[in-house]
Amino acid sequence: MTAAVHPLTESAAESAEALVHRLARAGRAAQRELAGLTDGEKAAALCSAAAALRAAEPEILAANALDVAAGEANGLTGAMLDRLRLDPARLAGIADAVDQVAGLPDPVGQVIDRSMRPNGLALSRVRVPIGLIGIIYESRPNVTADAAALCLRSGNAALLRGGSEAVHSNRAIMAAFAAGLAAAGAPAEAVQLVPTQDRAVVGAMLTAAGLIDMIVPRGGKSLVARVQADARVPVLAHLDGICHTYLHAAADPAMAREIALNAKMRRTGICGSMETLLLDAAFPGSHGVVAALLDAGCELRGDARAQALDPRIKPASANDWDTEYLDAILSVAVVDGLDAALAHIAAHSSAHTDAIVTADSQVAERFLNQVDSAIVMVNASTQFADGGEFGLGAEIGIATGRLHARGPVALEGLTTYKWQVRGTGQTRP
Image 1 (tube, rainbow, N blue to C red):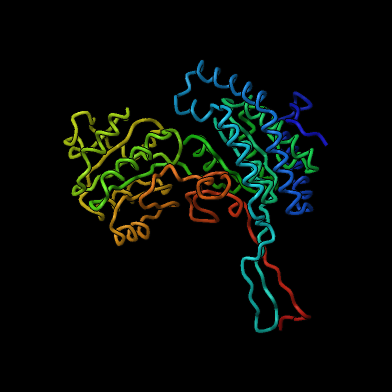
Image 2 (cartoon, helix red, strand yellow):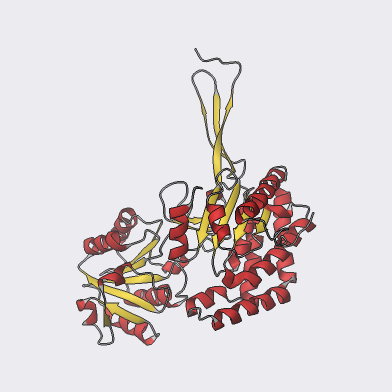
């Protein structure tokens, strides 16, 4: 069984649709093979893939250097380059995440609940894989390994279509990952990388109903919006990461300052980065928080009351409250208490991650209960909105919808369930 990146199409005349259908059929066949592997065999295959990633460090970093150089030449933003760039520490983290996924409990076969009907029928709901999952993503090469690991551990096959910005990195990571799977006796076709950057492939994946069971887009707003608009396959995604942090009147000023700095400036280009800071009018540390952010190099855009805190704050436009900057830019508003903060978040949040800093436990509980986002935090940085930080090993994405899965989507989110009914000869009258 081959274990490298799939070759480019056998015929130059092969259409995008034919290519996707061919790869999808191979993936579905491999997924059936996965169903025959034990929990230990799947875990061993992932450990082998992680070891292969570490062994291929020189090749992967060399491939990534080509992508970064091309990105700089093509004018990618600093945030995009940060997402794209790998170094030994980041690559080690990618391999470690694969090992962590290998060590997680296998969700497949878990019994969600059981019941007994009055007629003696025994019912149970059991977790099963979704099937073949298509992942369409942009400049983050870590998604290649994360998605492959999560899909395989949960018994799913994966068909990956990475962005052109990371084409060399993705191919090098996939070559190592697939080699590790094959060395452990797992079907390499369970995780496949589409071997062309032809944009028509995306459309073919979105319309491959019956072959691809779910699509997960990871990338910018335009990519996710297109997927959500055009897909004929179920989609699991979030469109924006407009994350808020509200500094309540009872917040500890030193804690609030550190959380606000981390939530915005640790990594500005990730979806869990704070994009709007809400300052309670009665919070005593507003000047210090604002000054710390400005001194750290963050551009602040505020309403009139926020601007009064520091002359360096620029005026905010109406669009700023609904903008995911993914950069060292932050919108700031002063609000009159919890109700005003809740109203602002309800009007402008993208339902991704919102946080409050407060020493008042009753206020914290009300915030947790009334903010309708996938992730709601108290006294913590929004940068923790990540599957690895939640103990999930890795994540395939953040979901902000209300069906199937919300928040970081990891192993459990990549399963569905089936009913198993055990009888003793019952017939329905």
